[in-house]
Image (cartoon, rainbow, N blue to C red):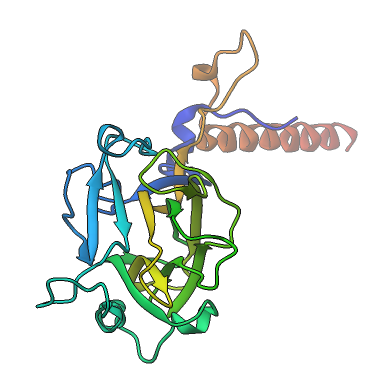
Length: 269
């Protein structure tokens, strides 16, 4: 049976604790666009803050969501980009060398709209957001409009006109419905997040993208206080001696045993 000690003896442990996995949302200002504007975001092309009342599709969280579309996004200084597109500005806005959008394999981008923000992450952080790709393009057509996400130099298609689409209640003919994207950061640092939608080939058929609930999810260790020591029912832990008292009692017991043994030996002599 293990000895029982009263709580005072455990003071040397300090504030003992266990480490367990917890979670929290790291700060990502205006990730849900609930300010009703583009605070903390940069934008290019046709970008709008929408509500259910103004667009017919419910935001995933709160009252607001972002809509991007390719309905003639204008380059700077051009009143109507119907025959020119703003492809050069799209590439400049996403800020990487070459044409990473072409590498996605859907064809040459003609025009598009995008948003971006800069965030700070630690290794293991998870970025997530909800998106809904909208389009008037024919899935049997030659040109394949698409939506994309880029995190620093990593580019990924979200959806295109060949994706599974359903009838839309928005101004567009069809949509994917809301889906979720997530990305886990491999290392700590500053990252640029870009989200956009583009027309491929020409601007004859337009597409759009809804974005909402952009969040940075962090797995954090949580310190949990150890529970106080338990004692058998009916025991009085206040009467249990401290270690120094126990040592003294043991010393007296051993001394008494030695004295009795010596006394018995003296009798035999």
